[in-house]
Image 1 (cartoon, rainbow, N blue to C red):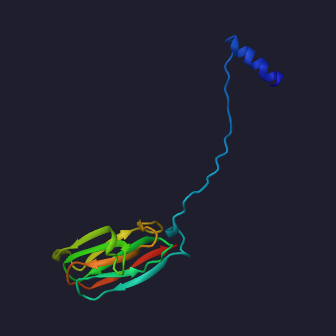
Image 2: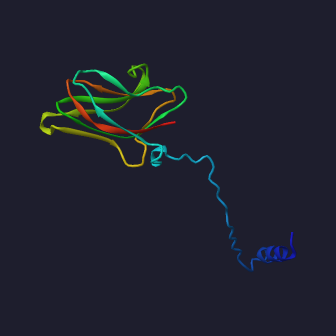
Image 3: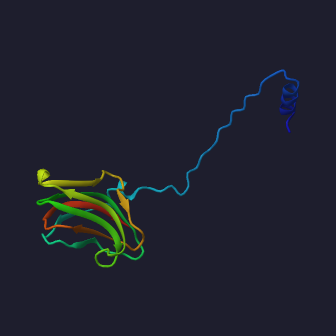
Length: 151
């Protein structure tokens, strides 16, 4: 212990002064997760034009070691009905499915628009080894696009 510190402690012990300690703390961020959707070099944009049948289609295929980061989804429907977005395994996400969103298109809003996600931000993230699928619960034609990162 330094002599100056010992004197300061003695003065405080007598109740003569007040000690104000100011310390600068260095904060180092480790393992900070960076949103992959914020990196334009990683984002893939794909157009959508689907047939009219009621069915589920795989939009991004399964990769056993990677996740899908859904950055945004925009679609217009020509008819009323429900539309669902899923992550899951199997050719149409039917196994281990995870419902992301379901939107109902009503006649008074046609052509209807469904927007999910934002700019440079993840709307949803799959488990490792899951695909991304869309399901039409009615006969409808969809046009639009989606943005994703797979890593």
